[in-house]
Length: 77
Image (cartoon, rainbow, N blue to C red; front, top):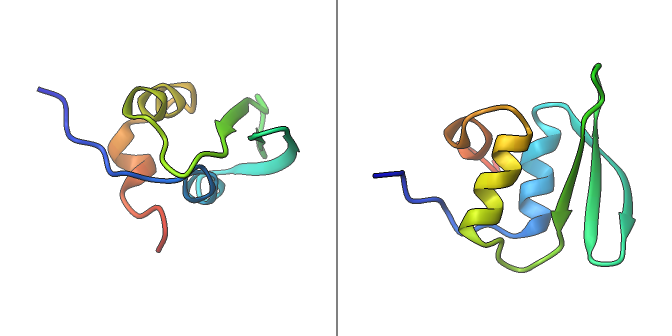
């Protein structure tokens, strides 16, 4: 059984990703575009929603090449 993920907004997720090297690049419509500061300079697209769906959250974590627990252990603190 997979762990239950916290309810988190797009803004909070972008902040959490900045702690692991994904910096804001730009915003297009309702999405934040983040760029990895170190090579290979991956790009993440995060929807600017009040609540990110659990599957979307899991997919973004997977794209960031890390575990869900690591990326969300302290999203706002």
